[in-house]
Length: 363
Image 1 (cartoon, helix red, strand yellow):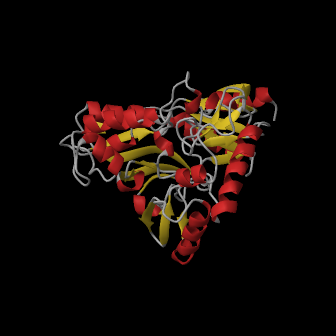
Image 2 (cartoon, helix red, strand yellow; image 1 turned 45 degrees about the horizontal axis):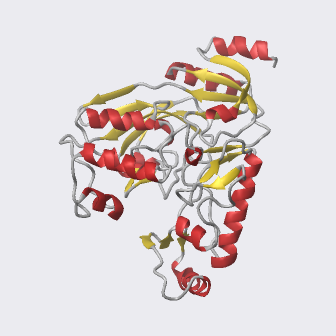
Image 3 (tube, one colour; image 1 turned 90 degrees about the horizontal axis):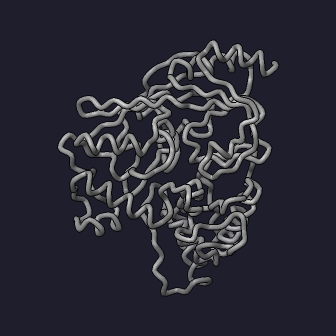
């Protein structure tokens, strides 16, 4: 199908079509080759556009905030559907946000309206619709514990319906929606705390910074301000002038080691780092969770690795983030990711798993 024919068909759906758009413009890693982009500023346009493309058997890549994507230098051979519906409504003890709404703006709106519950997820880049896809979490809070329901478009049947959390198969930084093209998130609804208090503070660093005992609450506005300050100190709040924020956030998930392998991992750590070193671990279902950032640093990859002049480097503030120093390609980032992953595996016997969704690249 020619571009002109495609433009005519998608204009009828309410989308705006552009050719040869550098996908680096649409991702927080700022890498990715060219593609045809259909921008959908309303939910109706989004639904109609996806249905039209599916009917024509044209490959589709959905992008909203672009904060969890590593797209290859060749771009995408199909149509990128840019999700730009951004309505937000607070009613009763819940907030409903359309999929393209800026996530931090949603959190800010709830706090400013006198509600609590979402404040620990402040400063996380990306869109509201992406939050249930990877079960976004930070500072002891996960989307799975706050979500009321998700409005989905089933691409096989064309049905639009609200799905309950127990249908989404939530796990650590994942759900049935991740790595699947079966459904499109149209909107999300979250429960709020009507008294303006924060969710119970379960993350020691945050509780200490607020002077609150773990498990207690505090005013949501105070928690949000502190979360933003802590994230900014680690280069985890987007800033166009700070290359440490040209990233996809935490690039690797914290690995969960099965119970029967924990002793071997501790032995490997003792061999390479020392037997008297305190190893940060956390309880997890079916095993023990280790800190990926701690493992990366102890494997010899310091902040800023591999050093000045490299187009792709670990953040100078946080070893868990891979960053674009201004001219990196997807290939540069993949090379760095492989180096770090393989180094940790060689020293400690743990294979780190990437958190971003890879498009046109593989580690």
